[in-house]
Length: 168
Image 1 (cartoon, helix red, strand yellow):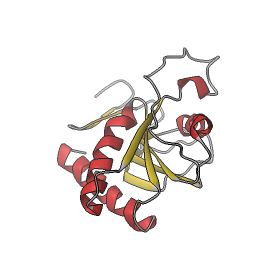
Image 2 (cartoon, rainbow, N blue to C red):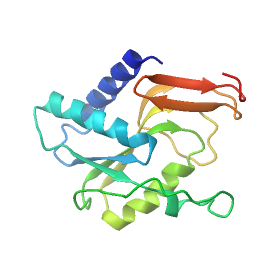
Image 3 (cartoon, rainbow, N blue to C red):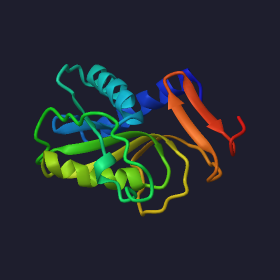
């Protein structure tokens, strides 16, 4: 995916979020640290343009302390969690760059508890690469990108990079 592809995918996802939720009156975007935060910011700005509003709520969530693989891999806190309002009764759209095993999303669902009890949680990802270990499915997807488990996928505003088994 090129930078233009990413821009178009984010714009499409923004429209889908607005359509599915009949507006965004009670929608809160939450970017998952690290990769999902810049996408949530861009998505929030695009939704604000679509809906002609400046009060789109965008937060950030660091899930590192809620992971179920803490004993297997080192804990590396991404950054501070900051969700600028109580999410009780809101529709929370978790935003991440890549959906792979589903374990980060599972941790995010647990981490949201500190900020209230949402009415519903939806998931938006820029890249869905498959290989799920948990029964998690995104509601909004920029691109389905079949990969091998040994591949590494990185997403940036400039594009998506896939390193195949350590070879680019």
